[in-house]
Image 1 (cartoon, chains in turn blue, brown):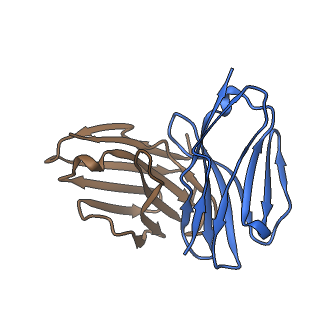
Image 2 (image 1 turned 30 degrees about the horizontal axis):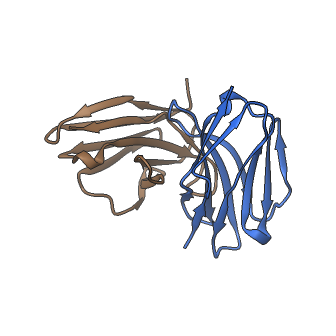
Image 3 (image 1 turned 90 degrees about the vertical axis):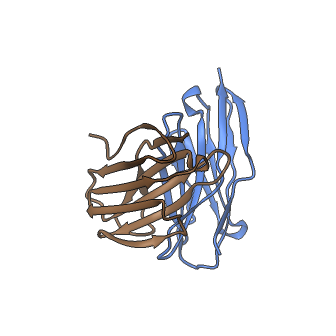
Length: 113
Length: 113
């Protein structure tokens, strides 16, 4: 069975602080895919990143960076110099090969001015 | 035009009403999905269509009836709903059935009274 855990239910930071959102996954598949999505108050989930299980290179995109560690089954997401517009619910998701997404429960991030 | 468009954005219906949610994707994707998002619960996958065929139905009550007339359109027909069906219903599409990132609409906020 596949499972995604996001242990942090809610996080509050002050603008310009760095913040890391944790994601731990479980799967028996050797080929799988990991995703992060952002859900702002408007409701739609915005795709941020997709990684496959064979690519453990960390990725940086502007203020966003992702740390994929197979040894600990984690795919953590860091926002550097957070901004108020980063306030949203962030979801980590897992897709085994040929299977549909399993989403984590989400982490609500509040960035205070 | 946005990639995935859902209408209506908000819907209030009585338990004896019949209504339909509409989703349209302009991305040329082959797979479409319905998700339910209730307060304090993880995203629940309801239905998956791949190339207009239903490939997954996650034990959803029959009062929810999906329809996929073509690869660009997806409907969710609702009848005799219960108050606990009140939720945000999200439509998504992806290039393939699994493993590629899904793009979401803004959702329909449904309230059953």
